[in-house]
Amino acid sequence: MMSEAKGWDRNQIAARAAKELQDGTYVNLGIGIPTLVSNYIPAGVNVTLQSENGMLGMGPFPFEGEEDPDLINAGKQTITELPQTAYFDSAQSFAMIRGGKIAMAILGAMEVSEQGDLANWMIPGKLVKGMGGAMDLVAGVGRVVVVMDHTSKHGESKVLRDCTLPLTGKGVVDRIITNLGVLDVGDKGLHIVELADGVTEADLRAATEATIV
Amino acid sequence: MQKVYSSAQAALEGILHDGMLIASGGFGLCGIPEQLIEAIRDTGVKDLTIASNNAGIDGVGLGMLLATRQVKRMISSYVGENAEFMRQYLAGELELEFNPQGTLAERMRAGGAGIPGFYTRTGVGTVIAEGKEHKDFDGQTYILERGIVADLAIVKAWRADTSGNLMFRKTARNFNVPAATCGRICVAEVEEIVPLGSLDPDKIHLPGIYVHRLIGGARKNRIENRTVRKKETA
Image (cartoon, rainbow over all chains, first blue to last red; front, side, top):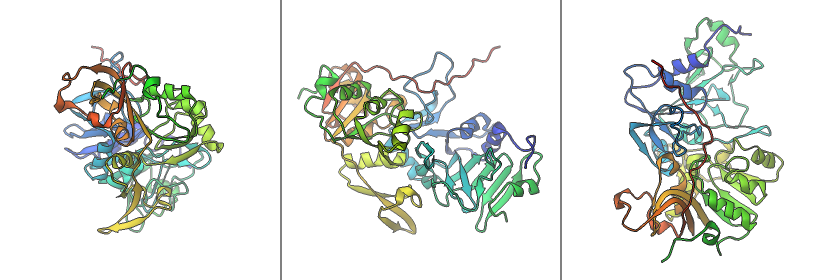
């Protein structure tokens, strides 16, 4: 069992994920920890954020009193526009996603497997929310980075040999960033890229059900 | 041809029937046709199938039609934030067909464009692909999805001229364009109806050919998730 002090918190996971961003690219950030990534975009890296409800060039949250009900992100939060902003309809939005124009998506996960399978949209009989745009994103974007807690509240690994929940996509995840470190999906299992602060390789292996090569 | 009607009730006259398929625009509460939904509720029409990205929230938007049990089946990508929806679904009282968001948008676009089906990679290897035709193109597997043609499309826009040309505002455009095009009849509610010649023809987002009936008086939709930042203090 991991001690509380080891590893990254939500903001540190987001900050680590922000290092994945490539200058000059178009990127889609999911809801939750992925939304925090926009707070940590490195200096000199210019990315354009896509919001799948129909916007490129997503700006920060508005100042109080400047909220516009016609201007929201995919999490239905009020946001603002930027000088390069463009608006479009949902069919156009997913045409650019499916068409491979978005370089990267950073998404949350309930479970991820060593083959790069991702589950993040429902728990049968318990939680019915829906996949929203996640299935389209993982099928269409160039690179999929998942950010998540490594284990459940009960300490069970969420990085698995096989997902137990209904899949969002099969073999779609490239990189996994958790509170314990960074893992890449390879041909024969996961590869350790980086360990979070204070986490040892033994800690990471102990918290991971999936094969680490 | 007179497209402008005096009320939502008048604009829906003679269109509604039990068991029909309605496509609705909107994303969350943003850009939803609230007057039309309310008027549909008041007619008591039932056993509806509704294709809409979301189902409103409890008591708001399509949530109103769920509360009155007028909906038999939803075709949606996301139904979180709606406790009554979840309750009816888990109790087996409401049918729900989950569609990935982009697949739903493209099904509407295709239906409106005379395309009965299309192949997509979205959903391959998931429950969404079960029972659907699979086909390989250039070494990639795709599934066949069908276009949607709705008996009625209901949408909300910002501005219209009297010929039904529509302009939307910011992210309130969302599903309103593909939904409008897939309806055999489309009824639009707008915040403002302006005289012919008032809109720049280069800035029309949806040409009036897709819009059959029109009402004004739409209000701004409410904000579902108000999120703000603090002004930096010097």
